[in-house]
Image (cartoon, rainbow over all chains, first blue to last red; front, side, top):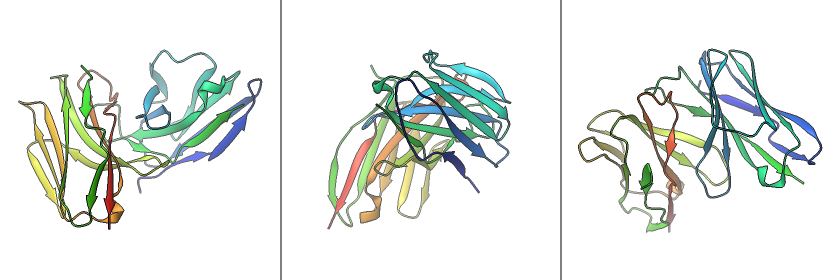
Length: 114
Length: 111
């Protein structure tokens, strides 16, 4: 079962709000990822967690704060976002962070910042 | 030069046609190669992991040419349900499974 789940599916938030996106996988994968995708563009990597430790931060602004509470869960905490942060936020997981392993994506959270 | 290059399309083809997607990559240390498809506003779904040479599965054939740094995906007897954006994706040794995406090629299969 190659399933990654994400909640919520849609989120509308104001620029002063604090919200969190959640991602869960039960495939025993040890690497998890956050991507941001704007319309008609490919996904852009934001963060990589490997064995619950932050491995890669692609110079993402501090208004995005990732958290990996355990090997199955990945959160993305949002605070003081800008309208240009509106996008599809995708979570993915892979068996390990080595290059050979396929990444499986969740359905995404469509975020609108007003 | 972009790290992963694809023709953005769109490719508009009639049902039953054969269509080929080509992709070139610039990093010779690239190690793993994937094709994902993305339907509209949905998430990318893994279609194929291409490890060496070529492989075939039903209507689909994927090829990897490391010497030319080139990957391809061939779809035969295309169906309406094949309409999607096809993303060429590459990861390389030392990149920590950091995927590099092409811009994607949009395919529209028409009656």
